[in-house]
Length: 331
Image (cartoon, rainbow, N blue to C red; front, side, top):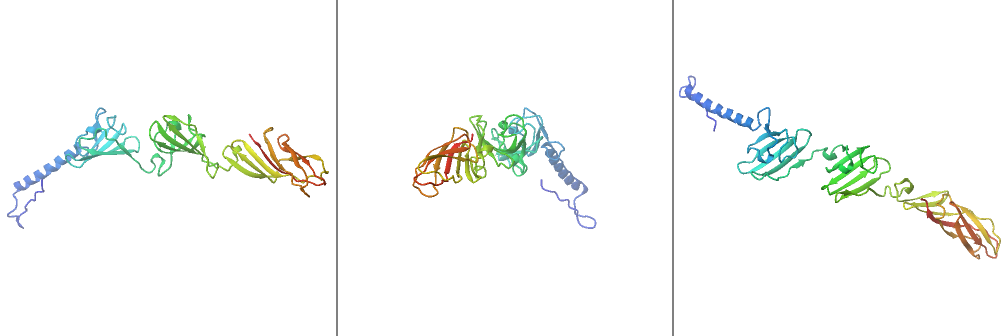
């Protein structure tokens, strides 16, 4: 009801104003309305020191149609979490209902909105705050196997039990659609800058696959991190590949002067070794005086780190400086 003004009359005696009785009637009417409003507020969880308790058999879909604060302390139906406070706000009779749920255990919040009478099946949406799922704050510590992660987010695993990442520690980025489809990326927090990726396809995780980038592709494959690399060893170019192949290219020392019109065996040492029996040799004899010669008649790897070359000279004596390319395997 509207506020009832008490007429105090004309000064100084108050003549013409409300009688004491009529003034008290107005006061009683207004305080009665105040007390009824306070009782209604407390009945809906407002203004009291306890929310309205709900039973485990009751549902968030069927809360009383009032603005109120409710507590499911022992489970319930249609909840985002078994133990929650729910604040319910109404837009008016037959209008919209908005519910906000707060976990009694963790700092988690959910919300949903629906028309009155249409709550059944209306899904809750989690409210993401800075730090949730490792976003906007420190990543979450991974305490279970990476196989068991469901919530999309950023995690850190450090010697966690069970099958998890490709290493015992690292940062895990997880994207989840369902128990049937998800992806994960794992980064080692060290100088190797190594990234791994796998997918959950139809409920089964694939093996971890290394992801190569410009930062790690051209590193030594023998370390287990790179695809290929090229180094210079004692003036020779050594190219090594992750599939086990190796290419060694260089120029040997100038030979002694070889006699004319005959074949001479020349041995060139390589600065690195290959697996015995895997080498294939290409040689340019490179004469020092004249190209009037027969060149390299035969060449082959001798053992693991030397190349034997049979050079036949021409009519004049001269020295040679063999240019050698060897393809083989390092593993």
